[in-house]
Image (cartoon, rainbow, N blue to C red; front, side):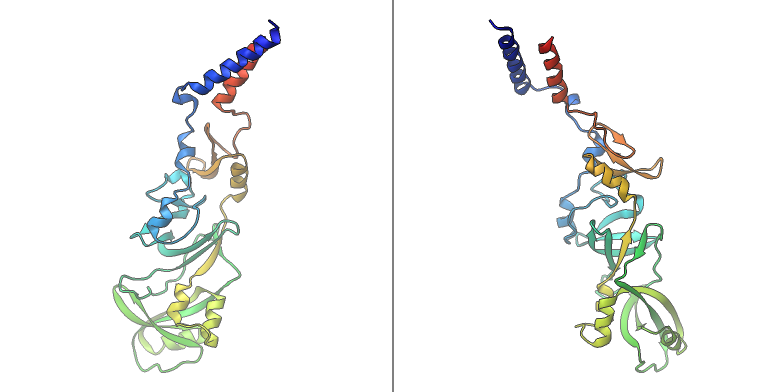
Length: 285
């Protein structure tokens, strides 16, 4: 019999053997970091809002391990209705996440009574978030026990909830007007730099917005995030999933074999590929 024929027959038989037998799981299991950080598709339906695929730097509390995302990008499911994110002890409703432009759209939360919560001075980590060009900051005056205020130019009256109490408040497009309103009340304070979307504010000012100040607040505002995007792109391109290393406080790359600092190793073949290559060496010899 011709030697090449015997070698080919042997290789064919070995391949059939590999395909028809089960091998120990140690040969096929992915690293647990890689497996645990798959996007939780069930999160969208449970939170009642279409956010799309949840990817790094975001991670879903109760659905993913903490190392799957940046510590400051944790998402919570609020009563099965919507997702929220906390920024420096202030909680916001998540309206939309755009991973391509790295823009997060968030809004002031709504109280159980259905009223909007009163605006607070926004606090956020400026190393991770900054407003987009679609945002303008305006002044809010929250008032208590006021004498007659009457109609004020460049201001809009509305009601909001704070400390379980409904308060009268004003949105002022002019900071001077905001402080003028403050002077007419026994208890009041001014928030000079609350962010709103430019198009929502313009709609309020020209009357085209079918709503009021609450509508502007519900429309939210946009921030652009920055969280080692270049590292994450390299990781994903190499077949990995991005994660966070709390030891180094940096973005890392979870791969099928183990975690890496930046990207997966191109030298890591599958167990099946290793066996095939080994058989080929035996046949050649």
